[in-house]
Every structure is written in C-alpha cells, then in structure tokens.
Amino acid sequence: MNKLENEISHGKNIVSKAELIWGWDTPAGKIRAARRAEYFIKLGGIEKGKKVLEIGCGTGLFTRKIAETAADLTAIDISPELIEKAAANFSFKNALFMTADAEHLNFAGGSFDCVVGSSVLHHLNLGAALGEIFRVLKPGGKLVFAEPNMLNPQILLQKNIKFLGKMLGDTPDETAFFRGALAGDLKKAGFTNINIAPYDFLHPWIPPALIAPVRVLGSLLEKLPLIKEIAGSLIIEARK
Image (cartoon, rainbow, N blue to C red):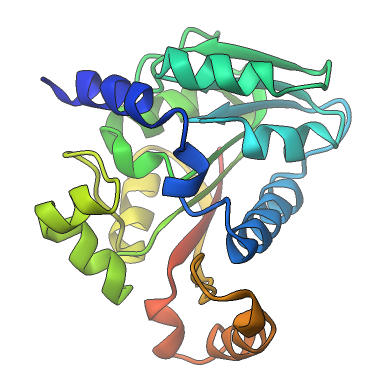
C-alpha cells in the first residue's frame, strides 16, 4: 500500500479505540487535550465569525473544543470511518465534517482565517500539505499545529524503530519533527512570524495520583534552556 492507503486503512482499524491509542482517553491525556485546545484557540485567534479549517480531525475531540468558540468550522480527515464517528458524536451546529486529503484541499484560495491540526502533519507529505494550507489561508491568516518532538527520547525511539512504533499504534510512514528544520519548511512554503516551541512533559499514562506534581515539574522544565528541548510536543504557529 502507498502512504495514503496506509493512513486510510489505519483509520479504519483504530476507529473504535482511537482516543486510547492516541493517549487522549486517560486522566492525564484529557488534561493534555484541554491545554492543546487552548493553544489552538488562543494562538489562532479563533472566535465567533472566524472561518477555521481543522486538518486530521480524527474522532472530533478537538473539533468539539474549538466549536465552543462559535467559529465557522470545517473539519476534515482522510478516514471515512473517523469522520463518521466524529460527526456522530457532535452536537454543535457550526461545524461541517468532510472526508478529504490534506495534500489536495478542495477549497478556494483564501478561504480560512485559521488552519489547525493536532498530530497530523507528521503523517503527511509536508511540502504538499504546507503548500495547500498556505493557499487556503486568507492573507494574514494563521497556522497552528501541535506535533511530536523528535528530540523527545520516547518519540525518537518510537519513530525510528519501526516495530516499536507499530506496537505503540503508529502508521508505517509517520515521523516527528526537529523544530529548526520545520521552521525552514514553513519559511520555504511562504509563512512568516514563525514560532515553534517545545512543551508538555505530562505523559498520557502518568497515574492520576502523580498528575499534579508532574504538571508542576513540567511547567518548570518548559522554562529551562536545553531541558525544554526534549519535551514531548511542539506547538507551531505561523502567519501567511
């Protein structure tokens, strides 16, 4: 199978347990998801009246959180099964779900104020995806994504040792990002005001009793030069 077929097949295979595999269904994972959604909304300037595209919406976890702003939201995913599940669990009226390929977006240029996504760019042909995101953004529009950090020890092993990645639910082609190289890719695609920050030391499988102290420790580690570079995620923002 090619890369696209792998992703479609993967979505079908995990649809019943996707949020568990992705780490959003645990007590710590729910806290991480809430924080990530806050970043999307704040950094993207997402509010009522804004047109927002969410790429790789999966089961709609972040779609629901973003929809609370009353923005005009379009959510896409390559997996028909995941789109079906996301739409079935959705009660807001301000979102449209579509099965679509992020590398070939069927939207007119300048359609959106903001494009967001959680852990999706590392599944894609990055150059093609960034080119399409840039095209569909309005002038001055914002890109905001959260992606795995290749400098994190677990991510480094998981993305480079294939059998380990498969055990942890990865697709065969996915990777992770070094923030310096990713900044270069964004600049090449035409983006400006690029900021990529490592964050998040709260692992989704932290036991509930340890969540509070780990969050305190994590907030300190995120401020330390060098140490912060091995955080689990990157929060990425840029402007067209």
